[in-house]
Image 1 (cartoon, rainbow, N blue to C red):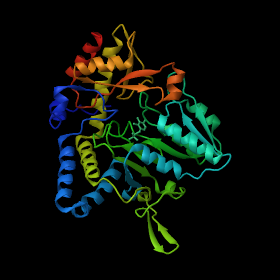
Image 2 (tube, helix red, strand yellow):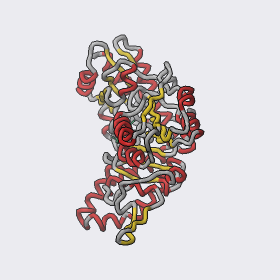
Image 3 (tube, rainbow, N blue to C red):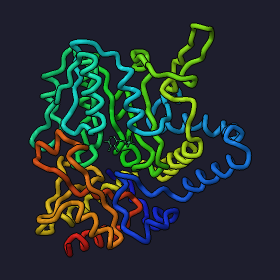
Image 4 (cartoon, rainbow, N blue to C red):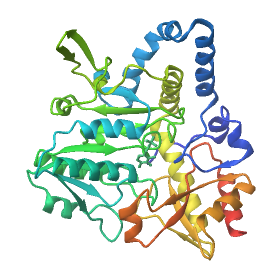
Amino acid sequence: MDAELIPVELAQADTPAAVSQVFLDSAGSSLPPRPVVDEVVAHLRREAEVGGYRAYEERLEELEEGYGLTAEFFGCDPDEIAFTDSASRSWLALLDAVPLGPGDRILTTEVEYGGNAIALLNLAQQAGATVELVPSGADGVLDLQALRDTLDERVKLVSLVHVPTNGGVVSPVAAAAAAAKEVGALVLLDACQSIGQLPVTFAGTGADMITGTGRKWLRGPRGTGLLAVRRAALAQLKPRLIDLQGATWTGPDKIDIRADARVFELWENPVAERLGLLVALRYALDLGLDRIAATVTARADQLRAGLAALPRVTVRDLGSAPSGIVSFTVDGMAPEAVKAALAERDITVTVSRVTSTRYDMTRRGLEQVVRASPHYFVADGQVDRAVDAVARL
Ligand SMILES: *Cc1c(COP(=O)(O)O)cnc(C)c1O
């Protein structure tokens, strides 16, 4: 990637907390920049003054424009966008709308996220469908030939994770999606860990459906999520749990279901958080997604190289061009103890467990790893400080 890095003074200007500590958990829940926080708080204040409905009506135009803004992100049309309260809500809503019957096959991959796997297994059991695991190669990256070999017209859905919750891999989603298309399978892409870290577009990924969260790399408020679904895919879906946002009650026994992605929204929504999410999306677009990706990659590479040079540390990342998520273990020290010891030095990391990525962690014989995820607002000197702190553990 040739994009210029974001100067750290610019990156930290709106995030005072990024200066006073080493924050390495943007894969968990990042530090929102000041404009995001201000927007949320201002709207809550306004609700206290005029009530939630009037406060909402005052912002209708911006909320409506938010669909266009998000569409810009994914390279699609505004009517292919919906907002939800989490990545999982987005993913579950789309999964539930995929028509499945006895004998249908669903393909998943070794980096599947725990929440998705649970939903897949439960739903497949009820529908009489099967969930089948496509293996990764020795490098930990999805084996495209194994995928091609198992695809047939009974495969109705291929579930892909762009960047897994740990392990560092960036999945070859475009090639996998192209293969899935050849048998007419729908491709559902979990982009929860890539949105806001890497550019994620329909053209670049080949997915039919993309889901993400606000609180991670996008630096939005908690309790926000989004989804994007191609019009052609939407026409094949059968949304089931619809309220008066997704349909109009036109007669005593008649409803008129929306034909756009907002069929997946519910009427009630956290307006302040939604507005904050839109500020976060605009903030990322203004900084430049390519510059963000280049800066995150530089910081993660620096962290990974620093950790790998320490005698007691094993970096647990796979793939040749790993993501901004750095996973590692320290000999003779439980990941929770590493996290706690670093927290005492104002360094925030988190622990990722086997229940989040069971296929992958089981294969590698891992129970837990420490996860460190530096965003563009982490200075390179702060990365050095983190490596130094791990060295002294
Ligand atoms: C965090 C995460 C999710 C779930 O996101 P929520 O916003 O908590 O629903 C899904 N997939 C991956 C890969 C994640 O890391």
